[in-house]
Amino acid sequence: MTIEIKNMLTDLNQAEVLVTGATSQIGQCLLPHLQAAGITMTAISRQPQSNTAYIVWQQSNLQISPLSISQSSLLFHVAPLPLLPPLLTHLPNNAPLKKIIAFSSTSCFTKANSPDPKERRIATQLTEAETALITICQARDIAWTLFRPTLIYGCGIDKNVTFIARFIRRFGFFPLVGQGKGLRQPVHADDLAIACVQACLSPKAINKAYNLSGGQTLTYYDMVKAIFHHLGKKPRIMSIPLPLFKFTTRCLSGLPTYAHLSAAMIARMNQDLCFDYTMAYHDFGYQPRTFSDTDMGF
Image 1 (tube, helix red, strand yellow):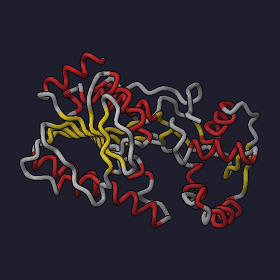
Image 2 (tube, rainbow, N blue to C red):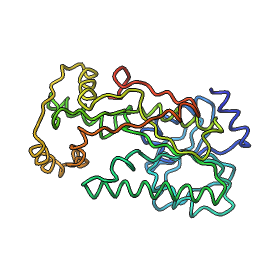
Image 3 (cartoon, helix red, strand yellow):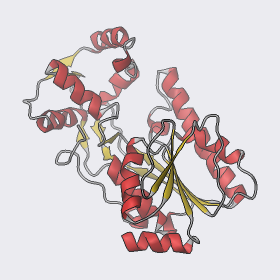
Image 4 (cartoon, rainbow, N blue to C red):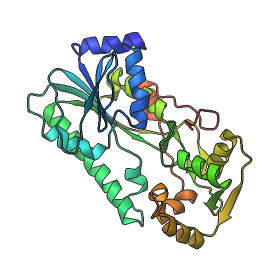
């Protein structure tokens, strides 16, 4: 695969590789894959970082700073998708951007009809950003590939799997609404990083969008149980009535650690959130790992 990546860059006339959101979960996994292939890249982050032999760090706030592109370029946009269309709109018409691989989320589907207005706004922003990205790329003749992952984990900074692990460590148990029977497909950030590389090498992935789920489908209950086992703890999972859970969530949401919690999120414990990655498998060989037997990153 390393030789193939280098050949791909040769075909792009020694393209400049840009990675936005380079310190995100996916970015942390993507940079080592590119570096191992001997690829020099510009990594963009809001916080200052130290340069290495292959990574030139650029401190930039993408909400207010433009992209700087001076030569034929490949962009991995692993920062929030709504930031990308404005960046592309403000690029000079002659900017030599050739290919974009960007990340949306299956939240554009699962939160579209949420009772929580904040979640509906998130879904709308993602959908509008996807449409804008495709429209701009078509107008500028930029090849694009769009990924919509499910629940991401693996680097210890997510607000789902890692949050559950931290709650278990602190309190020794985990609360569920009902039986927690909703199906989940957690996807490891490194599998998404590998998908970025695979999609670059596959002509079939050009100008397509893919839902990328993990390699194992399990209930929310079983996902929590697997996290207990990964922590070396006996599962202590308590079923709590929804009204009590909603009240507790409202009380905790004022604290930074629990600010992301919402009643709608809790209700989804018993909803199936599953997506098929068959098209990604056939187009570029996507084969994600299972959840229960992998490193969860904490």
